[in-house]
Image (cartoon, rainbow, N blue to C red; front, side):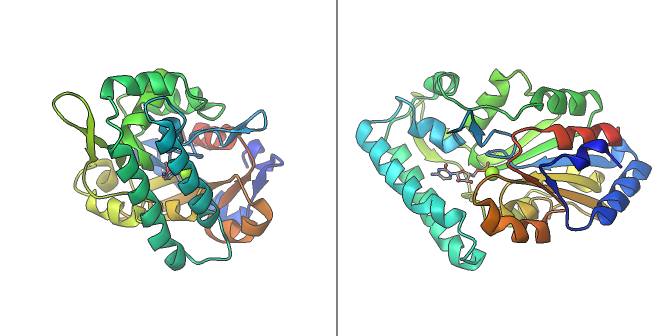
Length: 286
Ligand code: C5P
Ligand code: MG
């Protein structure tokens, strides 16, 4: 077994099963493997030195691209809906309409702010966003081995891309599927493009994109990285799936949510701010 799987942050419902999946994936070869990852709080850190790190949306919420009044409104939304997002006492069915409400309200407020496209890079630079420790190895190694990395995010595509561009890891093997901003001719935000992606409709998005991303058809072995139970369906667009290893970051409300994460993710990483385990698995597969 991979030594990092004995790290204190690692919990597994069935270590034997994990071993079998890994063996089967090694046998299939790295040219059949793809990585499908969520972005916020999966590739990025949840906290650093005891302080919460921002999501894509929070990067804008905390920036000076929006008015104080708008910031207040977005904060009220965050304080209202984030506790619902992580509430283990409510079912996904119950949470889904509320999540749609959160995203819809937040995007409506953002669109009223005349956000300038040419200011996004600065907002990201001035933010506390951080990719998880070990990101360089993950991104560089996947690129070197021509393994596609599909980032599937309910965050904001333009912001997410800027985070990885500024970190110097937006390589050609990275494909992003997310909510993208639509700007008018003068470069002011006028809307968000296409269908809204929120944390509970990644399955629909995945299925819509089977034609889009060639990798989904040709690489039947998947390493899935997520932090929400909604992320579990990100690979549903993969055709003729052979093996999938699901790794879930459990960042918040650990005790309440641990059992449900163990039931659905093969490997659960409890309050682990690093990519040490995914990296060890990736090195094992290549
Ligand atoms: O990249 P990912 O799919 O994880 O992005 C979704 C995250 O964005 C959610 O977990 C949610 O907490 C966060 N969010 C936010 N502000 C919003 C909407 C979502 O911080 N207005
Ligand atoms: Mg996430």
